Structure formats: C-alpha cells, structure tokens
Image (cartoon, rainbow, N blue to C red; front, side, top):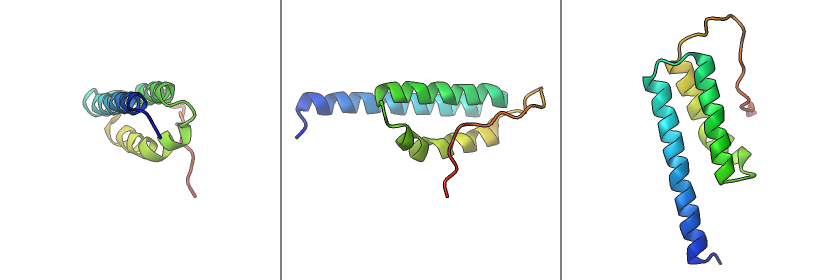
Length: 93
C-alpha cells in the first residue's frame, strides 16, 4: 500500500509530465518549427518525462508517441536539407 507521501509525489510528477507534454504540443503547433527542431523538442520532452518516471519508456511510446508524431507531421515545416530524420518511435504490429 502506498503512503500519502508516495501518492503525493506521484501526483506531482504526473502534473509535471502533463505540463511538459502540453508545452511541447503547443510549441509544435504554434511555433512554425522545422521538422528537425520539433523532433529535437520531442526527444527533450521524452528525456524529461523519463527522468520523472525512469524505466517507463514503453509507456511513453504508447501514451505520447503517436500524438507527437501526428503533431510533427501536421504542424512542422520541411527541413531545408533533404536528409531524412527518423523519430525513434517503435512500429506497432
């Protein structure tokens, strides 16, 4: 059984995750970023979320990866270079 302190800590960390995801999503949608910049922003958000919840990379991929992929596809500008950058999101079969 979790203590009140543990529950409060998890709630605080989840609130922080929501803020990270919301700010990242809004920046992608409203900033006119190039694809490479948005991908770097997503990777930074992923890193910060995993610092708050170590070992939960698969959960991040399930919950947030598709959302970020859709936003990057829809709201970013093509890079000025012609080289492809692949996001490290796993393909679900």
